[in-house]
Every structure is written in C-alpha cells, then in structure tokens.
Image (cartoon, helix red, strand yellow):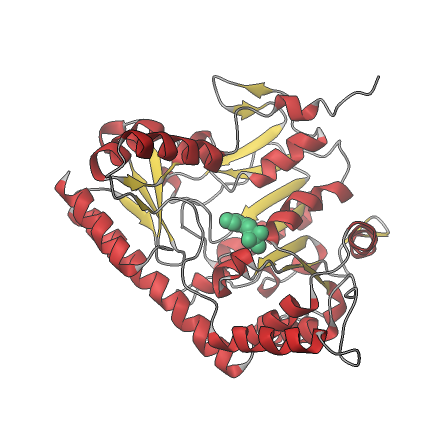
Length: 404
Ligand SMILES: Cc1ncc(COP(=O)(O)O)c(C=O)c1O
C-alpha cells in the first residue's frame, strides 16, 4: 500500500486566495446586482506592452519555419535573455553578476517554492511575518517546519520575524540563528521595504552566522526611493550568502505569460559545495526551459521601447497606489506601503480582525481586499489593498470606502 507525503496533511485550510474566491462567489450569488470591485489578488490588469507583443508575434512566426523553428530551450535560459538581464538588471547597478549565474524560469512562484530543495531538511528557516505564503508552505511540504499550532498560527520550527508598525516593518535579527532567511523586499503584503544600509546589515549578519538569504525581489520595479537597493547584490558580500529571485510578472505584466529568473552566484558555497552547481543540476533535471516565444518577450522588456512602456505601466499602478493611500488616510485609516510597492497595508479600524474587516468591506462597500492574517500571525489586524486594478476602479473603491 502506498503512502502519501504526510507533510501535506499538516497544511491548514486552503490557499488564501481560494478562500477569498469562495467567499466572493457566495456573496455574489446572494447579491447578483452587487458591482464588486476587487483590489484583492496581486494580479496585473494592463495588457502586455506593444514592444512585448511585437516580439512575441515575431517569435511565433519564427516557429512556423523549419529554418527558425526552436524546440527545447536551453534549460538554463537563452543567452540573448540572460545577457539582457545581466546588462540591465545588474551591470547598470554596478553589480558583478555573470550571465551563467542567471537561471531563467517560468516565474518566481516556482523558484521560491523549489529553491528549498537544495537545502538540508535539518535547516531552520526564518521568515518575515507577514509575508508571501509560498516560502513557509513549500517548506512545510518538504517537512522542515515542525507542527502547526492553530492558536498561535505558527509552525514550531519556523523563526518568525514580525514586521509591524511598531518596528516600522523592519525585520529584526532573530534570537536564534536561522540557516535560511527569506527576505521579500519590497514586501508582499505590507508594501514596505528597508533601506540599502539595513539590507547591508542583513548581508553582514548572514555571512557572520553562516545563513543563506533567499531574496525575493519580485516588486523591485516599484521602488521609488533612492536609498533602497534594487538588488541584494548592491550590498557588499552578498555573493557569498544570497540567492535572488526575480519575476517578470509585476514589472511587465507577465502573470499569465510566465517568466522569471533566479541568480545563484558561483561564490555561494556551503563548505566547498557550490550552490550554483546544485541549482544547475536541479533546474536541468526538473525543468525543460521557459518557451522561446516567452523568452523573446522577456528580451523585449529590456529594449528601449519596452523599458519606456513598462515604466509607464508601473507608473500607472503607482498612481493608483498614491490615490488609494491618500484616500484611505482621508477616510481616517492608518496606512502603510504604497511608495515602493503596489500594495497598501492598512490597520483595521477598532482592532477588527482581518477576516471580519474583509466581510465588512465586501458587504458594505462591495470591495474585495486581502486579510492580513492570511500572510502570517503578525498580519492580524491589518488588511491589504492592491494598486493593480484600473484607475476608475481604484477611484470608485475609495469613494465607497469613504462613505462607510
Ligand atoms: C513576493 C512574491 N514573489 C513571487 C510571486 C510570484 O511571481 P510569479 O508570477 O513570477 O510566479 C509573487 C506573486 O504575487 C509575490 O508576491
């Protein structure tokens, strides 16, 4: 008789956004005339930029000719894309990253869930709390997190680093030294980030205690302040302690197209074992390459026209962010984020529980957001709204909230 991976049985409830979808569906069935505005899931709404579409069309045509047809892509990524990434995302910022340290993938969700595979099950992970749920859940599936406590909503073997208004949403070094540290900056869900000097301290800390940092920079394109690092490799010593994850989803609207990459520097070693070689082995064995058409689309993000177009799109979302943030402040809410990120993080009124506020907003304003507690225990009492909707919907949602 076969047995299952019992670790899956330990996962509580369903994935956050499935629960939200079920609640919204039930509400719409009961209230078919309600015009619901979703500022919930972090999905983009603007179409792919013209330069990207043009590159995709061209690549599709190439697939129709025997001379230009492409089969399996190189599993670590085409050189044209890896070179464009190095030039624009690293060289331009003074970071010394080589093309063969870039591993092209189908997005940061897969990479952030898969990266833990190359580490021992004995390792202890540390996560910002609240944070993108994939880091903890993927480690639970692997069997690294111990047991779940329903009351505290914490795992016995996870080190939580609360990021709350009292510490300006800046994670503090944990009392017990972790082995793997997940940093998501700018942060999903709080929309806050830390200064480059503070990130440098994390790099120094990781090098000192012998930890690896898994640095998720999915929202890097939204950074507007000059003292915030766009890549962890802007910090001295990061190449010996950090892996960086990037996505094309939020900067260029690839959520449905799927493209991302991971950087594993060759200097990153555990003893004399190269993590770069391990990830190359893992990627080569389990991944057959992102599609040629999509990698050409990714290359177009770095063309002059592509850069200008995606910058404009990010600017549009950030206009929404400013509008939502100001509108909520006017309505008397305590609000965070929204400056270096498309997420606005608000304190629920009268210390309402996050899910109660979700129901309240859905029922009274027909606006959908995301309960903070879904991202970790320290998210309780907070709520996330995204700037990824249309401008009109953002305006309408704020008008409704102001009337509550
Ligand atoms: C922090 C963070 N990392 C990764 C992802 C997923 O990115 P991708 O679409 O590239 O899989 C998300 C998506 O919401 C995210 O918030």
